[in-house]
Image (tube, rainbow, N blue to C red; front, side):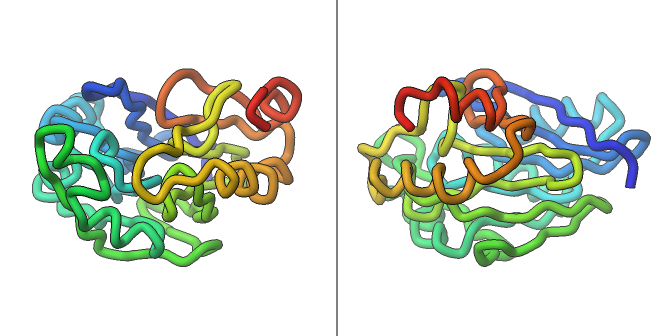
Length: 209
């Protein structure tokens, strides 16, 4: 497999990072958390010569799913999420989309177990369950390339909020310490909001952990 590359499109009212991961020289991407305006994201990727091979969700909050259905319809790509996020993805009150003024639900094509591998577009990643921001929050780890898509679990020197439905700060801290901090220090962390960081940096400087 060739070297993986990662791109970012920042979208929506919460300035959500929508990442696309692809193998150098290939045109199919894994798309993470299409926050809004799915047709815009689809067209932006198409203009770069990319097609969407799969859509992966780190969790089901409105600011990470509003663009899913448009992209699924345009691309035919399957949607993946952690199995314990099913209820939140499919409930407009729990995922806060109703409260945000645009009710939205998403039914994933495949709900994946903790530790499960997903292979699409010739790329494989592993789902790491990291509950806390929501009860079904997860991260996606590309072990060979030392890339972690962390969603709203781990930010640069911060963590995700836990005051929304199914959130728990104690659970989130345990998730990071038990699931993410054992990863190599050089793993590059790409969060749902803000700038990238590394596992090593967060071990040293994250005041929440």
